[in-house]
Amino acid sequence: MSDEHKAALAKGRAEGRIVREYLEGLRATKPKRGRKRTPDTIAARLQKLEVELAAASPLDELLLVQERRDLSAELDAMSSTIDMTSLEAAFVSIAKSYSESKKISYQSWRDVGVDASVLKSAGVSRGD
Image (tube, rainbow, N blue to C red):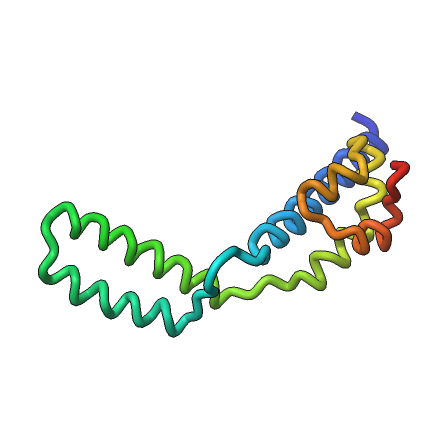
């Protein structure tokens, strides 16, 4: 395998990682429908769950334990912040090259949630 081939593979892996991280960040920060939960509302529900667990039937106990696990995971996710600014900057720097190498159209990027202004900054146009 030539050095050029190795460099091309490394570039492809790096670009793929940047795209994956950016798209995962978009998905994680996408606003959800309905009333927004806050750490306080989750903590209040967790306290109520403890009371409900004391008198729960075995089946209800199972469901409440799972709800507690889900709420705890959601609370943990809220405490970890995603730096979309740096993810977006990295994405913009490689998006045109990645689009060309993988033959990804402008509309495909839009379909997965990439904002038009980000694509414009990256140099990916509707004609691509």
